[in-house]
Image (tube, rainbow, N blue to C red):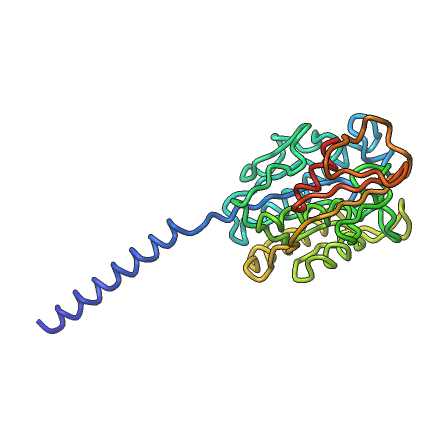
Length: 294
C-alpha cells in the first residue's frame, strides 16, 4: 500500500512537471532571426566589375553560388543554435542574387526592390545577423569598402562614423534587437566589434588593398560561418541591443554634389555645403528615414 502511494505521488509529480515544460514551450517567445546579406564581403570576392554586377559581370554566376553557400551555412548554424524562424534579406544590387530554388528551405527570402529603408525589421525579431558585409567607405585595408552607394564618402551618426553595418546595428538596437553575428572581411569584423564587442564574427578574407587579399576556401568559409552562427545563437542572451538614446543627427558627406532634387527639403534637413547634408530626428530611425527617403 505504502509503495503504491509513493508510486502514484511520483507519477503525479512527473505528469505535473511534463505539463509545466509543455506550457513553458508553448509560451516561449519564438526566436526569429533577420539576416542581412551583401556580396562584397563574401569569400573569394575582390573585383566589383568582374564579380558583383548582376547579369553583366563575367564571374557573377559563381558569385551567386558563393553567396548562397554562405547564407545556407548561416541558416544551418542559426537553426542548430535554437532559431525558430530565419528571414533572409537579399541586400545586394536590387535584391535578385539569391534564389528560391537554392536557399535553405527552412528560411524565408525577402528579395527584389524597393524595400523599406527599415527593411521590415520589427520587435518580433530576436536577433540580427549579417552575411557577406563589407566595411564602410574609406576604410584602409578593406575589400571593396563603400557606404550604400559609391558616391557617399562619410556618414556620421551623433559624431560616430558608420556605414551599412553600423546603421543597421543602430536601427535594430532602437527596436530592441541585438546584432549577434557578422561574416565578411577582417575590416568589416573590426567595424562590427567596435559597436558590438560581445558579438561573434566570421572573417572569411583579409584585404591587402581595396581589390585584393587573401581568402578562405569556400568550404572553409561556410564551415566557419555555420560554427559562428550557431555559437552566436546559443549566446543570444549575452549580447545586448545597441543603445542610443535621445535625438539623432545623421550627417552625410557625398563624394560629389547630389543632383537636385535627390534630397527632399523638409523639417530636420539642412544643407551644410554642396556635398554635405544633416538629417535630424527625435530618434535614429526618424533621422535615418529622412536621409534614406531620397
